[in-house]
Image (cartoon, rainbow over all chains, first blue to last red; front, side):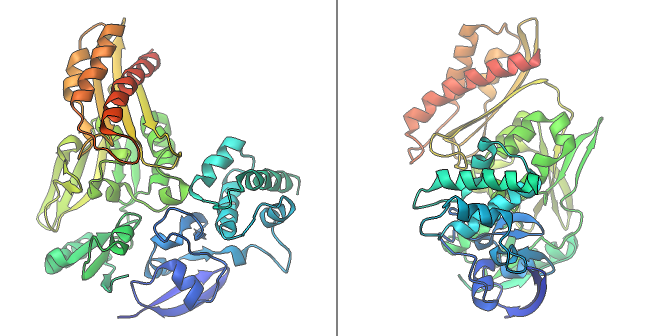
Length: 157
Length: 286
């Protein structure tokens, strides 16, 4: 039986009917049409579906859409403002921090959450924070470089 | 994903009512990090999923000097990790919760869900046992308190009765100032432990006055290594005594071969890591 939920996604309120078994990741992609959140393993291993829920980074494949009723979500689509990339996105582009790009939305959302909480992370903190995000192209060095640069940019800006 | 009916009771009383009504057909969801995987793998196929997410005050963490720490079952791993009271008064717990999986999972999974799942691979139970924790189990008939080392029965099996919920974890004021937590993860940092050791120790002039050891990922339940504790309690902490401590702890384990290591390897690592943990705890005990 479908249930009505109200969620704020990237600042906009949506009211939708969903079946309880629909995962938040699938709800974002298929019901709302925000396909920037990627679906990889769907068992909480790969981190491609990472989003922010009430400002905290979570895996949207380990969450039912109905559980998000009344909550605020931010997806990769919510980071750029007025056509301008946010500092983390900018730093990923500058550092060539993606190859196939599949893991990128999850990497950026995780980095965003880290930098919001800790604007001056050490390399170890960056690596520990990204530990649950897998890049099958193995381009981790550039990703860590990008997060370092984003941190610098945020401090100076 | 299987089809199910989803219920969100707003009080514990309503939750018990639903659990009693649906019995074996119902499963409870809190953070969801464990249940959703089991649903996807069809290890569980409930007709009704009862969410505890709308029950207020279930996530509270409170500390009083005389009573100790009380953690609501709905507290997320991350909340415990970042709690100032935990960091100040229970550094072992802070250290443990910091190491559970990675931040995304810690932001979602609850400590009540973790313990009630009865998964011997996970970290919190061992450290809570090392800190003498007990758990409150609540049903429509009332509350009972169970020491955590009597709560774990077997793989995914606990002392919880049908229609009963783990509602609170109580950690008494810390009795032993020395502590150590070793999560041995040879593959990657967010993995389950190959062997996990949590140890608390009180020493006076090189003599062990008291010690308590919890081990995870080494048996069908989280282990309270009572026999090993007896080896050291009341005795001088010598290299030979520490050697014996590790060896006896190893006999209390019954690990299995898996992709984190062979049973033999894990038994050897218990010897090494328990010894190492005791040394570290002794340094911290001052």
